[in-house]
Image 1 (cartoon, rainbow, N blue to C red):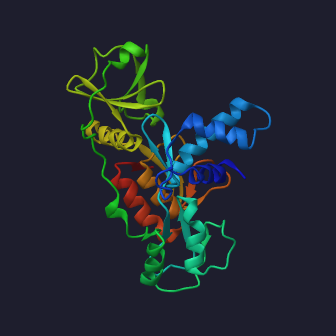
Image 2: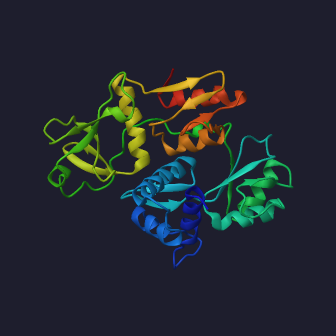
Length: 303
């Protein structure tokens, strides 16, 4: 079992003691330790750790897991996705694997119950939705969901501020600074004090956690809010992020780009992986207009 299969299975197997229907949230180090115990890596342990960290990010992008603050992860709610109400021959299950066998049973797939691509033997969008919802699995379509995608926005400050200025704890912190002709990774620059912070600044700590500086105070951010804030700052600065789009094969290059997980899940469902290029998706002709509209909604410039 590879990491992309092992991590959702591991998170699905850890349930809350008081309410077994709810999965536990585990810290990244706990996940790595459990994975290492179940299937010790062969060879370079540092390389395996990096692969596991990349797998966590990829699974979050695909909607399989949810990331919280402090590098903690939980398996996503069980969901079955259809391309549209008229395309129901192949459905995709994502999220809590504790519900996967139930989805197979109520859809009468006749398939091995570990398969996540489901071929229902019952017909009709409403009927499929009804039987899935009865066993606690959500059912939705992705082809008409663009209006449900969140717009880039600065974080809403509702948590208590951090008790200590992070510059006291860390010598170096990164600030997100949109610049033309810079990719997303290059828009982070190192700073060493809070003296030159703008009134609203997005910061990334050495631990990988994000902070929002607002009215002289620092607030911890969830990953999704942080990524939406990056695109909002790009728009405010007039420096949209460019994404490589090759129209003929429908290839979109997302190497080095972090999308909001809601956008990434949506795009992953409408596209296929490019076997020759990591983090590159192939969008079928029928889905290209809506995929381009979604990336434009996010504020990206396709080149």
